[in-house]
Length: 381
Image 1 (spheres, helix red, strand yellow):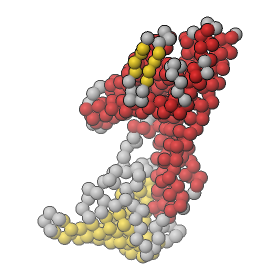
Image 2: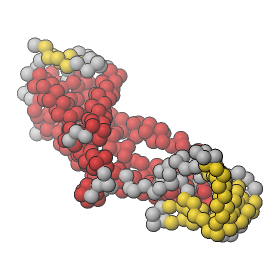
Image 3: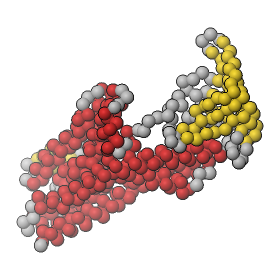
Image 4: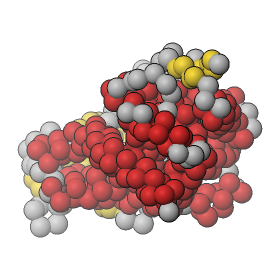
């Protein structure tokens, strides 16, 4: 009964700073992305409700990062306070072993890992795909509504469009002038008597359909000047969902749910895509394991003998996460760019697990643990 009360008390100590850190870090990440989105409200007149919907679709990706970090901060602050006020000494004196204190913490970490796994395997990809669909809808709306008559419109990447007249009812334009300077193509000037914008929601493409016009192009290689007459001409527009050449991109790895990712891995377009998909699959399971890994590090460092304040423990948590992220990014680069096996993505997990187990052993044997921010660990009898 006493052990149950102590475990519940420990969970309460962890929950408060963990929740606060989760809110703060998620808010900070959201503010980093909201600046450009708010510019769409101010400059383009996009309704604030659509912007909030976009931000809501970004939350799962943020939670994949902030849940493990918030748990680490909560554990460090809780155990740090208990150690500083000698409550851990009193618990040990009453026969409470570290293994008993680890049970509720591991249970909390296991729950956080399940939640992170659900986010990274299913919820985050679906939210990323929804974000891109809505972003395309907004961009298409800006592109069609934003075209003003007798104005040079630069809503399209690499294109400047001028129309003498625009029908407000159907969006049809007349007496059109287009300066085409898209990367990967020869600069060209296009004239057309009429034209309009066609939106294909199926493949998320946007095209300019021009009629009765001509393309003027200067070939820099042989100094030839070309004039191409056309009755109908289609010009694919480059929005966020296309590459620099105007080709529609396939869904990104981050937008594939686990079943879709497994199917895509069977028929990759090339070796580079095969490595990206393999690394993406391992990345999701690695991120799902981070709460448990951070617990192995956080608990022994939280009960270390020196009296560190909340600020020091907070900085320590950030340093641990930064080190993990650096190792994770390095392993991902080695897998994708150098072609190493995708299992190499587990390098940070292996390193942190070994270090965490050594620290736990030192804490269980009541050995003094020293840690500095440059990342060296050592045990001292």
